[in-house]
Amino acid sequence: MKAKPAGLYANIAAKRERIKAGSGERMRKPGAPGAPTAGAFKAAAKTAKKPKK
Image (tube, rainbow, N blue to C red):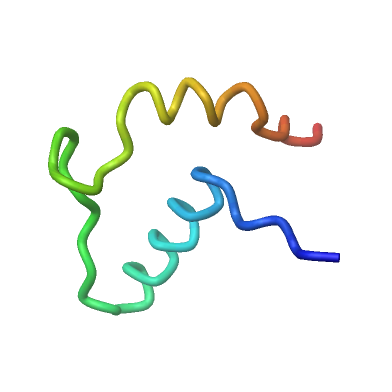
């Protein structure tokens, strides 16, 4: 059984953690090549897990 790849929100959170730890990476600007599009966020929102209260 294959493991599911991390989703858009998980990838963003992981990159923010790496940046906070001093990786030297930067977040891409909206519209930059390779940056998530508005459509990607809409599609990811349909399957995003709701935070537990």
